Length: 595
Image (cartoon, rainbow, N blue to C red; front, side, top):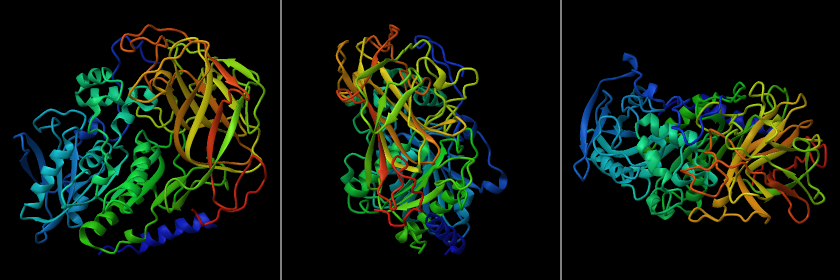
């Protein structure tokens, strides 16, 4: 039994605290290869552990039903057998799986098994978007359970690609699999590749290229619709066939954000026996690479990574050793609510415990108004008169990605008003901004954010990229969350529906989710552009074949007013006393009662 006293004190403290670029080349050129910014890069896969961190291991070649052999490394404790097993299945090196240090778990009395998945490292076969990982993973678990050193109980951990293999294994898993702890990934593979119908270019191209699977990048471009090539790649479907408890570990500025939130919500309420009611969610404010954009990481009673690693041990000990580590009394969701940086006493920057995700909330609609375009638009709860502003979209002079929940640097919260140096995002002529008055009190936004933008297009297709920012009194405009929607994909992922120029259309943009308190004295801003490159692929706007672009400059009208109410919808949680800086100056403390 581990001594949890210090951690229990720290967790209790959390509750008490709550009470008290250079642009890339044209898309018709060969795309460049960029460095992976996070710790699971190719460089990590070749990084040797020190002798102290690398107990002796044994290599096995585990046979799959089709005869393919998978390279599998096993580390065993020196204490008497049998042992519970920590399994990680990885597309990277089996000797350095992300988020898994074998020595740590061997010292805790676990056998550690690390396997290079099919087509990766020294394993045989061909990798194809994790399509074989359900069957291969089940075979591996059965193999572990048959070993003399195994007590028949297996749990899985790991982040990034090793998180994806956990989601892939969950459906119909053998009884020996007792728990999963996927981090910074998603079971929803189509949505990962094509958020809003636009290719998640920086992630997809660079990851596949770094892994040596560039052929699959070009294959993916031939399947832009969610056709039969994606069958089986929603790893959470059907949810009733998943029976495994999971600890979903996500981050607000991570490309897997929607996976952690969506998988938790789906399996907590629709999972099979053993899964429903046994899902837990952890959301910290960091990026995939463990940073916080241009700012130092915000405060936490326990450093984010230190706490997350301890939670994994508590999780494994509970399900694999039957130890009373407190998992049965965990809140269903621990989320970090962000707040202003460098403002002592600002609300937020603290943990919140919830019974479910998302918390009950009122949807607050803020309407966009014309103002003095392109940068003087308004944002408030009153419908403006009928007006319009022209949005310039030139795919050969795209608005660059500058922060957000992406894969390639810069990621995380970045100032859109000051960077990039020399040509800030919000000062560009092809970005329209809309800003509230100064907030009279704090405004808490917790949940999914949605923009509904009415346009009168002059081309059959285009993209809308919408950013939500926190505007400080000194003018900083810090990116909170953003999203994109391709117009031709607005009718669903299985069909294209083009626009008729001169006809108004509403474009709904999923801006992902957040947990943020905008402080009194700040303002809330919405910025609209037609590109967000290199995070997302550029649209040629022509309505033609996107794999053979005919670059076209678009000039859609963004419409406002009673007939075409362009707006953003913010989830304001029902946590009393109710913070609402639009109407009052109430800055009372939060209640501990959270629906």
